[in-house]
Image 1 (cartoon, rainbow over the protein chains, first blue to last red):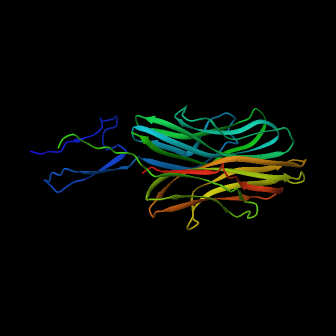
Image 2: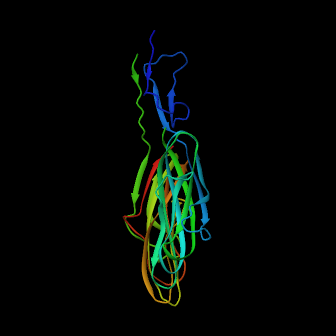
Image 3: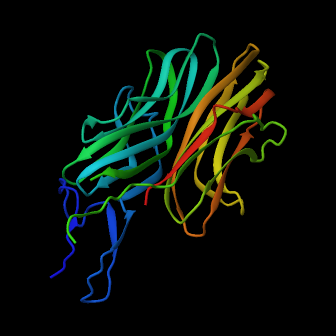
Length: 180
Length: 155
């Protein structure tokens, strides 16, 4: 009895329908026994994005990590994910100021999982009013074993002087699974 | 037949492009100006794009009134002009003091986004605008060589 044996790679850690590649097998007619099978594959990782979101930090004390409302994603499948957090930071300072800044990064619960990224930073020794804005990305490769929520958080800070307003705006999170 | 092996290689489409000529935003201000940087998504699917935009504003704040200028960047469908993805502030020149200040500010801003292509190919272009009043603008630009985009198909 002729037969065809199909050999694959050893099963990985995420066997099942949650795998991020779809295999297309072009089956012959029922009961046929061809010597050649045509097999293709397509990438089907899960992915998503959220934003834009904003938080006003003016009334939040310096160095107080604050979630950007709405900037939150849930990663449902086990695997490795690439996460990208983009945000703009803005601030106004009055007079001489040292290291007035706005920063942002990605968190799982209270744990920071990406670099504590500077969005804008300003020092100055002149009387006057100065507004600054800057944008930056904070990224992480993060391994998930059970459904996990990642959010974008940030804070303002100043070494000395008056930071009279601060905000994080236009905050987005993009993510995609990169490995099962 | 026995021992047939199947090998599947991940071969998603990817690409990159770099701005080669610095784009002047001041002449067209406050309108959006095509920077000259484009990228084409060649086939249907979902793509991840990373743009890095280096902007610069040089201006004089006279000391009698303030400056309030900023550069904003966006991505549009090159064929229709319709905006796609986020608008991002790149750099700001906002000073108010009783002495004249001449200053240039540079900053690089990311624009990351995902795009689903149904009618392929889809070409995207980077646009930027110099916005706001006040002060005397010396130049407002998106700088060549440091402004670039990468894309890859993710699904």
